Length: 177
Image (cartoon, rainbow, N blue to C red):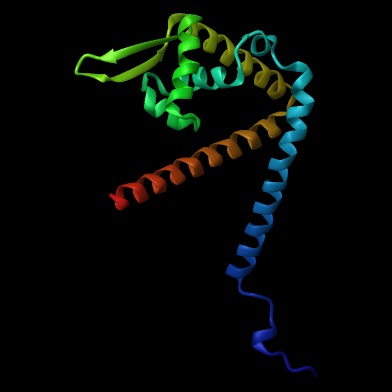
């Protein structure tokens, strides 16, 4: 009979679970790369609202940030877009001229310039957001109930992981101060 050494047996359950977890992570990362395929497949059905916005990509990014964040300082807007202050100011100037953005000084500190969407900018983003929601709805309607449950569960888990990551990031930033 062969002598079985305890060290040559299968790895402990924890090691196997970690290996399985890593395989799943790699699989999900691979699926993430396949999202490019999804994006290419959806190009022909991009809502015409997005194509008719008549904004440059940088202008659209500014409008999206202001829609998501609400009124922000010009310096914070430039930083969040990875633009220099002068470049961001030029982009915002053009959006102000077209009626999408309002720029206001703070009464308490005239050096601070706040940017926010105008009613026209809000209307544009609401229309674009709704077009995206409608597109997602059409995709979801094709799925079975079982698939929808999986998507819901996965999305909830992804949101929770993002929330935890954001909390950890905030904790590290506070600790550095």
